[in-house]
Image (cartoon, helix red, strand yellow):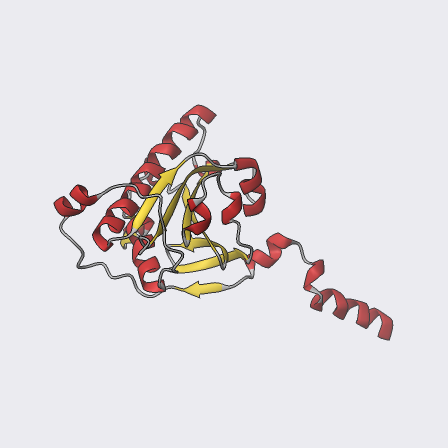
Length: 217
């Protein structure tokens, strides 16, 4: 009886025997501050200032800035049916926003306003070939979930998810222009490597990556 009980306790306590995906589901959750949804520069000014930058300071972004930016990107701005700050095909909301940083990989949960940790590894060096990707403190990885897109061809799903990603990434561009942050979006991505590191399913597709950070001083 003692031996059986010991074996049961061993399996319950030793997390190395639990699959990685199970650990991710019960992983760290970072509560984000309430996003500041007022203020900022006028729209015409930020459109005038919008530009791409490939130089970043390694300084981390405060949680408040991260919360504000993620809300601007893909947050909930209406209580009815959880409508978002960016449009999506048929309101299917097929894009998920992952955050790759020095502290690990996270998934943005707009409804809970939290970051869900996938794992603690710094995967920035595996995202793309550009050196700035490793320097940027935040890399937003946009992932389309094809399982939410209904009975459409792969070509249609790719096109529609690309359009949805464009809306979100432009919101980030405008937020960065308002706050004086550096950002750039790119598609030269090591997809097979990155998909494995992110533990994505076969029907989850990386569309684009957007690096964000402070301008170097």
